[in-house]
Amino acid sequence: MRRFLAFVTSLLALSSCAWGQGREVKVLYWNIQNGMWHDQGNNYDNFVRFVRELDPDICIWAEAESRYKTDTAEKMQMPEEQYLPWNWDLLAARYGHAYTLICGKRDTFPQVITSKYPLRIVKRVNGNGSDIIVAHGAGWAVVQLPGGEELNVVTLHTWPQKYAYLAVDEKADAAAHGGDRFRAREMQYICEQTIGTDPSAKDHLWLMTGDFNAISSVDNFHYGKAADDTAFLVHDYVRGNTPYIDVIERFYPGDFQKTTVSGKRIDMVYVTPALFGKVTSARVLREGFADCYRDPRGKDIHNFCHPSDHFPVFLTIRP
Image (cartoon, rainbow, N blue to C red; front, side):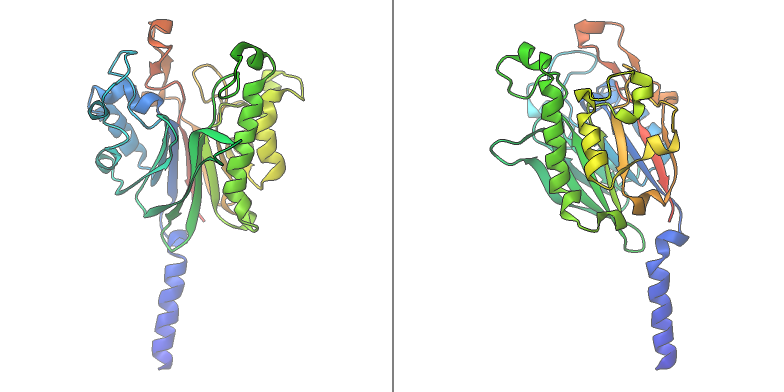
């Protein structure tokens, strides 16, 4: 009996630390602009090759829905024209991911998670049905990591305009920084509905990422704005009211890392202290397929970019 109990105890110990003894977990986030419009006419072959070469364990995609016909600014009118998001399972399988989840979706700009490991939705965050609207939707999912640990993943894509959502006078509202304030309300609500529900969040594995459509005051050495500029409201809320750590800022202090073709850093990866201690590398990818550039047709094609107007963010985790 003693030998049997010792054997069972050994198995449990090995199981509990399987992730720590195994290979690192790699996470890729990218706003892929209109469902990877750039490569949809090529059957996504270049996109799939890019992901396979990085070999991420978890992918988080923003703007994960087909919206425009290939190489045009003509919107798709019929659902059967849209390959994504309905076929993410087929596309993800091509780069080795067996699990897919539409995490946040309120309109045609959803966020999708694909993974080598099982995942489940905890909550989709669209607003409270009255005074709070999360324009593009947000989501909270859990990825079951090897060894049994759970990684909480929050995805989001906040309102992009200078004026608030449903503003009556868009020009006047933009002048009053209505868009900044609307995004800040979105951010507060998303945090309250996700990490804010976990009193011990700093000790648990939480990751929040997406297109925040807002710059951070930690980058003001680059922007040179007034300290109280409303452009900083979104990330000031995160920094002042949650345990989240801005991974890229910590890895590159004083070294500005743009995430958009326009030259801003608005795509963030936030993690809790418990997870930050396990992050071994983090970087914004701007080479090869991820070397983004603006379409030369300019406004005639909505200033679309190739393959996206955002650069991917890639990090590795090893406990």
